[in-house]
Image (cartoon, rainbow, N blue to C red; front, side, top):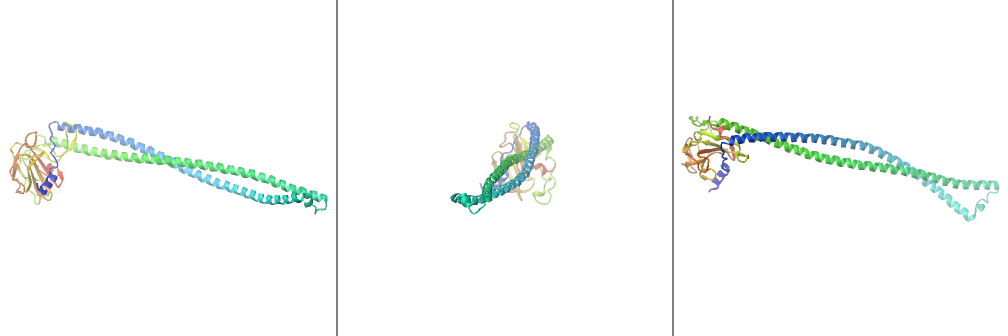
Length: 374
């Protein structure tokens, strides 16, 4: 097999067409009903998830408000802490100054004790003045002691106030961390919920799309049932190539469209599959003609398609003819419009004689009923 032939087969023969029986229409309707129920369930789940997101929004707003109020309280506490620390520093400075003065007096007292108080006061001749000087000296010493005790008491109270404010600040910071963690957890849960809603929404949109395709398939199956197609004389071709022939192509053979293009439901499994062409029920041995001029790309047995012919119409357009009883052409041969390619058969099929017909532009199949003339 040449590389060119392999490429053509890859483009136009991806797999066997999906064969259906009389239960197909009921299977399609059952699947439509299932999609309707599924869509209703997805909408309920989506609504519930959105409500949960709204609750999370409120919770996050509450935590944010609490953090803002906590920040205001923290600002007040920081101001109080600076104030009580300043007061504590002032008291400590006073105490340090008093300790300096008391130290000098203590040094003087030490010298007095070495030489004796009487010798210290010997320069004062008046006994009364001596007693007064001695009393003042002892008073100053005692006053310094009392003042030092008072200042230490004030310092201790200031230190307790600082410790109390610092404990309050630590408590507020712990609360702030807890609220921030809670808000982060809520935001994470909110993001997960939003992703869940988005996934539900995509699934619901896909369910809607699938239901619409299945309804179109149902309408197409009902519309085409018992309708003979291709028995009228074909219209004249339009000027231009294959791409200009939409709605004007001749039918490859007269028959009834048994399976339409698009999504189909396997009656046995309920699985939705893509039908890339149409199954045209026709008389066995009926002539199969080319709807438009082209060149034969494939003319051989293809697994799943039986005897198959593929025409290349240029500009990436291909037509496929499957399950032929016989074909009367070969690869590379040019084909005129309405030239006979072969006959309808049941090769590679278990459901009797029919023609599988497909139109592709490159790798993408298109609905033949949009291209074949009424």
